[in-house]
Length: 290
Image: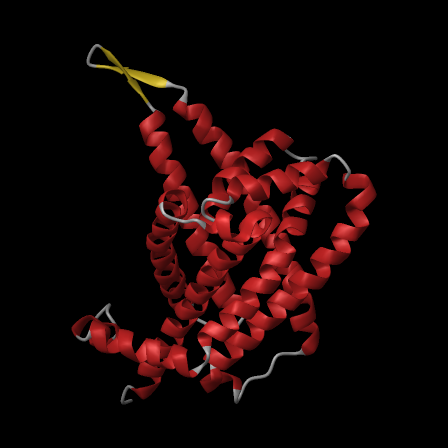
């Protein structure tokens, strides 16, 4: 019995054909239009979600460490604009008691809308399975808040791991008569941690958002694909916004919002593209002769 499935071997033999088929399916499903809607509502819920997360988690870990972790990983979500977003978050924290209820309502509304749009987008991409499967409306109503809770727990775990790695970076080992700093190893581990977290969060979305059960290996395939593509594009965006872009001249005070929305739309596009990869892989499995 071979460990590699027939669809996987077929993709390995004809990767260009599979890529073209995936892009055609993505285009037919109006992926760019759906990604724009997801990015818009995700951006509206981003700052309230970050503020409330820091308010809640600061009872468990130091707020400064939380903000430092957010600043590091926000660069993965909104390249070149993490300082501006983090500045907005820090500015609100002083008035957290007065604006807590407002933030809670804003986060609940916009995050539920964002997840609702994402769920509808997934139902379009996985149209071959939603025709026979339906999700109870209560599950759809509760799902966004369960995932927000999952993100908060993930942020807590990443903060603790990041603090440990930063402490490790200050240490050194004595070997062959010399002191070797561990900062380089800690930096690599920080990057690996961020990439792994990115992959697992995307995979979690692919597991829970489409109707019906998706195998874990399929979710990881889609998550890894989207994460790799985003890493390439993210570095291109950082280079462009820090060297060539004149967005601040054109948009002025709206620059942060415009650039963040643009980055999140690209991220949403890759999120849906990863889902399309899973969908096309499922079609290959379904079309295999029994």
